Length: 309
Image 1 (cartoon, one colour):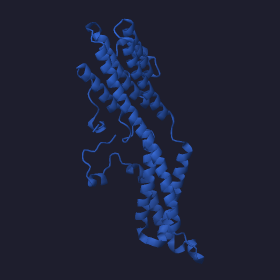
Image 2 (image 1 turned 30 degrees about the vertical axis):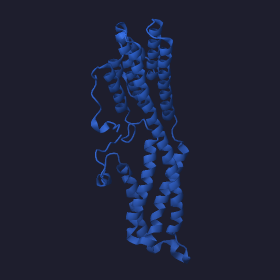
Image 3 (image 1 turned 90 degrees about the vertical axis):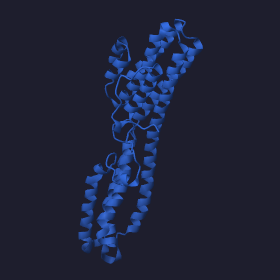
Image 4 (image 1 turned 45 degrees about the vertical axis):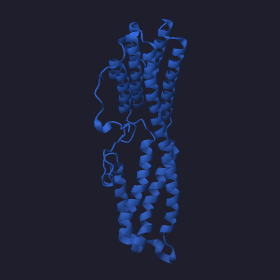
């Protein structure tokens, strides 16, 4: 996720990182070339004969409809993005509550190591979920947070966050069977473990349900045809301003289409996607602070960190 230290309008006007403009340059160059072709063909344009002409008014009506369609698509994409962010906010809150309850419910010195392992396991779940959603290897993060036997079990697992939750549930149940936890306390811990499971399920639902392909094809075709035909209507009315105006309008429509495609998959690695590794680092840092332990890993690069303010 891109976080701007300064929000001056001039900085935003010339921002490069996080902008979709570099990916649009080939298409904008094509629109510019078509605009020059429309100007060159203007004296011989066949639609000028007999009083018939390709006018801007028709493109105005199509532009309004297309803008509404793009707005709908971007709204749906942002809903997926915002839902993913809310799920990770829930994960942060439940992780802190789960760690706090475990530390408060088990003050006995003889279970000090077990409760510390439990809290580190909660941090391991956040790290495992981030890697699971991005398809990367969580081995290094899990090895520094979990005991060796748990890591050996996770090495053979396909869904590592699920196995971490199972390990946490067994540990809490074991403490209850040893008499270190009351049944009511175990139920409170289980409620937060269920919340973590629901967060994982919600994230997997978003990641496993892409935006309908037919909508993407229809929108891309409509925007492309509209922007390619627009210069032939503008050439007759604004003349040599056609390349500039046509490219500006094309940039607006192409950019909206590109932004919608970028944020509809919030767990990816694009600059504007959710910073999962920074979020999981924040969760781990909070839990280590509750344990009064130093962090065992450096934070992500500053440009990738997520500003919580």
